[in-house]
Length: 516
Image 1 (spheres, one colour):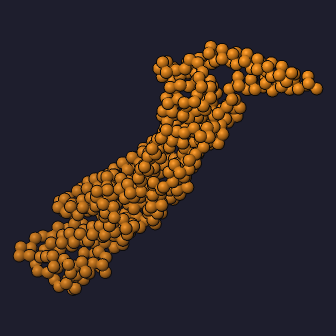
Image 2 (cartoon, rainbow, N blue to C red):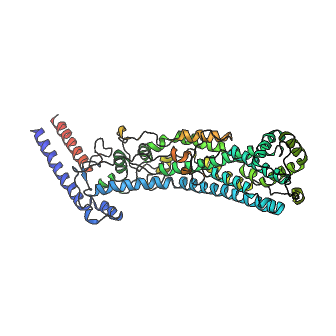
């Protein structure tokens, strides 16, 4: 009898509690959620009025809930919000690579144009018609250098060596203009010039300096373009169904339980981000090696392969070579005539113009390197700053006050370890980091790669060629499926249910004591 009375009392108390809880839910249980839902911009018609059983929920816990049609909107909003968080977190990285790529590309192209223009003006002033009539030799050189820089398949050493050969031929003809020098005779002259060195050591030094400087400059700009492509591609989040479920549970499922103001705990946020950003985190090691290779190449830009310090005085160096050949005119002609025979005099011998008579020996050039040094110092600091970017991305996103609570904040929403179907994780290499790192390291030597077969079709500006396009490919997007509810990390007992259970236990214990 005692047990029966105790059970009846317990049931009576439970019924009273249930009625009280129902009244609370009916009156104010979802009002805060409804207001927050409207503030998100959703129609009030789909907002909640009272709690209902959540058997139909796909992601959030299937318990008494304030969610009805809201859940699907929350799922879509979660995808949009997460993509926005990552986009904002990577914005500085993308902008940095885009702007530095453009700065360096513009600088190198302008340097080429400025150098050609300076040489043309100086040589017109110094040699007059003699230069104008042979300007095509110089124009061809600069055209090929620009073609190489913008991605063309140009052998630098062969191109520069060809320039010196053509310049020697024109000079020899000018200095011996009273003779009939045909193509066959000039072919014989070329055979002797390697030994005679008409320009001294200038061609050897200039060829080495220019080719190495251009290899480093083009590779560095290609590297910046590669980094820009990586940043752009990796900032586009392809969310799997499991990722969407976890983000929705973290950001919006608490609303279904009437919790609208409390943010996720930071460690909970980090767990979710580390799973949703597996693709980005997986390339952290490759990214670090890429940045290290870029920083290594900067040492060349700052040092012996500084293209600015090589190209700005190129007009003076070529003039020095011309002066050297003029000074050796008699010796050169004697040795050539002895080896190839003396050519026939022209029927109407014209007076040979003394090239030296028009040459102004006083050449000066402005100190070089200051402009490039500023660019290099800036990008060097930025690269160092972004070296561990991808590994720190979850931390960067979760520190946003709109995403998660502060680390020292205890009033926050915790969650179980996020569930994840590992088969849905994209684990294929989508960016060929090793190829780019290898190209950068090879460029550090200053030597042009033998397999450098960049084609005209791949050339655009600086880095729009070579490895950049072939090293980057967009990964296949995830198919967003309807998230499942297994292992939901946000399930919890309704407060009324907990109270009912507690009253029942207390009633049973009280009746047992009376029985004793």
